[in-house]
Image 1: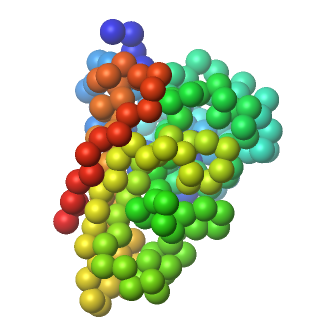
Image 2: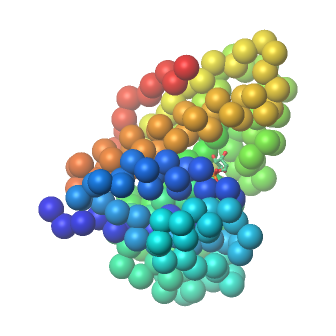
Length: 201
Ligand code: GRF
């Protein structure tokens, strides 16, 4: 089994990146080989440097040529708190090999502008009793590609956006690791996979 090289795209604090780094620490089959950020100030870059990983900051996240050149020989691309649209030419180069983690149960509460706190505010405003996390394949639109797996998290009466976000983030970390490990175990299949949903609370 050749080593699966994983490139992680980030924009924020990098807790999903960290979950992946921790889970793959002793793996012989997969490794995070680089961390690419849409912003120089992303805390995720500090986590990457602590792990002695190559890092890059995109000058223009909308530039397909720059992103493709930076991705180089990555086998799997993981968007982990990445807030930019991936250019279609880049999506096309990673069929079934580019995934995203979203802090809600897509297709609800997804799409342009639905990230971070706004997602949880919308969930609470809707009166939904369940929220959670989704890992899906990336396509040319925000949060729209085929779903791979979801983890459900109960919404409780006194939840605030912050308390819900905290519980969902924990579920995200577990779900992202589970999906990456399963994709690697199956040898990065060329057809979409769908794992059974879990209740994460
Ligand atoms: C998380 O809610 C994640 O789902 C979203 O960005 C937030 C921060 O993620 N995509 P991280 O801590 O930077 O991984």
